Image (cartoon, rainbow, N blue to C red; front, side, top):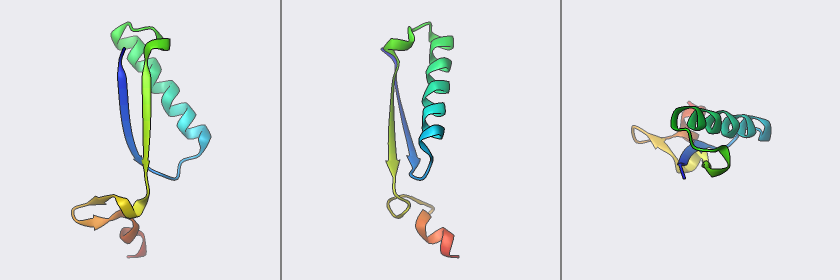
Length: 64
């Protein structure tokens, strides 16, 4: 049972998230041979004020 855990900043549309999980599932099936119904994809969305790169919150980047 492959498990894929994806962390991303919130803000994508439902259609984008749906496409993402479909494409990731297809890639796992193609490369592992696991049946699609056994592939688990976990999406963890973070708010921009809860994620930083280089000590700068993503929410602060937009205001600069």
